[in-house]
Image (cartoon, rainbow, N blue to C red; front, side, top):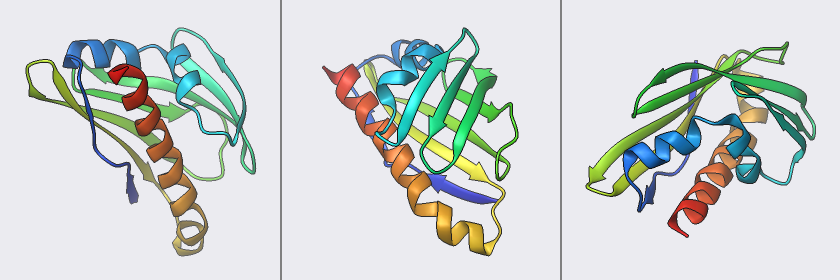
Length: 134
């Protein structure tokens, strides 16, 4: 497994507020990078059409309130992976957030996919920080 991590972001909201936001798949639409051509959400999943990859349906499969949210593809994708949001309360009213993808990539796939996946995570973390920090 290859572990791909976003930058850590500090959000000036309580861990409960950040967790509540990330627990709703529809909220991810504003966090998507420009390579996402379309986005649809239900109460438990989001379907993204990503340029160069195709459609990926991500469902929330695990939640550890208020510190962790795990999303896993529900459709056939080029490689197995999960997307984890990790939240740590650094002080009262301040939360550290990081997104991590754990992907089953061979050497060649790692060479091709690692940078775009890291960029994807960094865009989401950055947009989340901008949005919630106001």
